[in-house]
Each structure stands twice: as C-alpha cells, then as structure tokens.
Image (cartoon, rainbow, N blue to C red; front, side):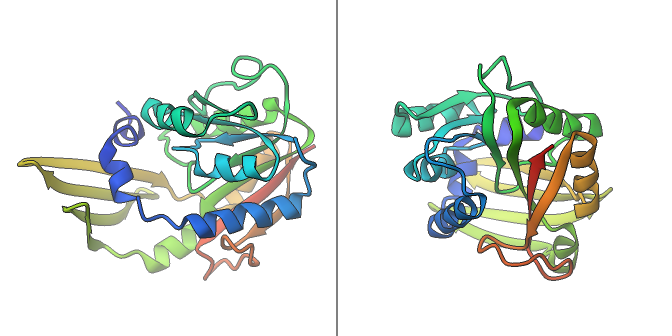
Length: 246
C-alpha cells in the first residue's frame, strides 16, 4: 500500500495537522479568486481536497465545486458536513481521468492545494495528474498547483521535532534522500507504537513547468506564499503556480 493511502485515512493524520491556519487558507482562496476573476457559478475541481476546507471556501464565494480525494474517510466527512447542491465530494485517485468518468462536463479551473502533489515514485504518475487536469479543463481554464519551494525546504529543514496533540506525543524526523523529503512520524497511543511516514519529491519550479508545457499549459504566474507575494527562489516557502490551458 502506498504511504499516502495508509496515512491519510487514519484519524492520527488529522490529529497531527489539526492546527492548520484556516484563516490564512481563506485569505489565500479569496486573493486567488480575485486574481483569476472567475465569474460566479464557475465550475472548480478541488483536486486532493482532504476534508474539504478549500472546497468550502470556494463554494462560499459562489462557485460550483467538486472536491475529490483518495481518502474515503475524508470524503465521507466532507459529504456529511458540507455537501449542498453546488458543493459535492467524491473519492478519486488524481492519477485517474476526471473527464468523462467522474465529471460529464469540463470545468473552468482545477486547484491542487497544500502540497498535494509529488507523492509518487514514478514520474509517469506525476504526468498522469497533468494529463487528467488538461483533459477536464475548458480551453483557457486555470490549473493552480500549490507546491513547496524545494530550495527553501533544503535550506530550512529541521531534522527533529516533537509535537503534542490531544495527549499524543508525535516524534518527527525529517531527511532528504534521493531527491525526496521524508518525514518519519513515531508516536504511541493506548500502549501501542505507531510509525507512519510522508514522502514528497522535491520538484524544482523548472521541472514542474516542464511537465506543464508538455501537457499544453502556460505558466501565467508563480507566487511565494499564501498572501500571493512574489516568488523568490531562495526565500519563498511556497511555489504556487498558476497555469492556463492553451
């Protein structure tokens, strides 16, 4: 089983990351929507949506949103708590085609947010994501790929840390190996030892742009953080790419 299928479906994943900054995420979505100037009721796919926080923000702005994710537990939560006529959720592997299997009409934008890319060992799987997004987008549609800035990760990596969440002590070790950043997560709960890990490929901005160009996208903009500051290769924590389908 791939690490992300195992880890993302556990309650521990959501416990560890429960303190994500929702206010910052909402500001980010608003600024991104203002920049893209998509009309109200435009159709957007939130690719790898998790429990749906970005999908909800997009829907509040008046968009018709489909959130998809590989984690059945996350999708179940989102369906039970957030679904409405213009906000739906489905289980979907981002490597598989969205159109016409999951959706029957092409969409105005696809958003892939919060480092939900780079999980795969085979470059062919990375390319399948771009192919699926290209095929589901209308001509001139937007693809937002929010990824880490690999150079910033290399410069700022903290090798060991400890976080306590809900009386669980998470011991976290990070390393870079074979161009992946690997996070080992150890903890105990109810007398049982657990070990999970995360593994994300350190794609450079040049590599991501090359993928995009191969599949018919043009990069319109790249930002360095969730406030849409200009991208600085050495100091920006994020590499938020805005691509347009040619």
